[in-house]
Image 1 (spheres, helix red, strand yellow):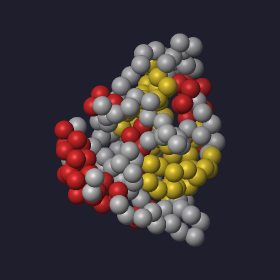
Image 2 (spheres, one colour):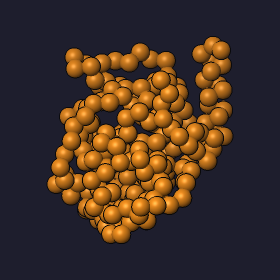
Image 3 (cartoon, rainbow, N blue to C red):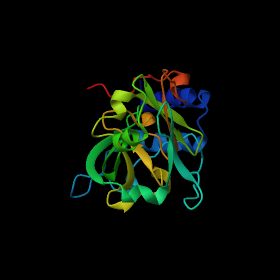
Image 4 (cartoon, rainbow, N blue to C red):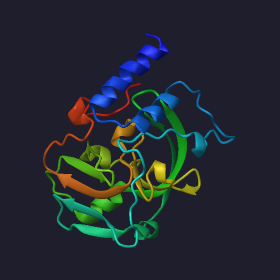
Length: 213
């Protein structure tokens, strides 16, 4: 399949799933561009791909809105976004990869997801953790994936506060999972005893979401 045919096929599938034109343009512009890296092997933010179901990044009022952790937990709670900076911070580098082939390597700084979930006290029968974004996007992962040491809520990317298009003020980062699992502009985290299918999973994407080597 040549480049044009591939893009036309991909675009048709994404439009059927509700993708916007800017989203398609962003994706098409990154699929076939060699990954640029800086001297540390990181992809510069200006060249880092960004795909979303909305045309423009949603705005979160960090002074008024809260990040909620709820569902099948014994102690649901809500955090001011600036409170996330008061939690123990971790730094890690990982590759973010889109199912379409675009990818970039970044250094992330943020909070381990399992720290937030442990504070809430998850139900022993909890099955999935659902992540909701301000763009009305959602996805979920099994509890085991959420509790991995590498799963985090990122506040910084390549030594800068998250850019709006990359999920500011906080986004999910899960190395080894495709980008559609790594929700941006997080507003709510819900623990559930059921299997949950998110936005793209309901439209045919794999519920597993793990990158196959």
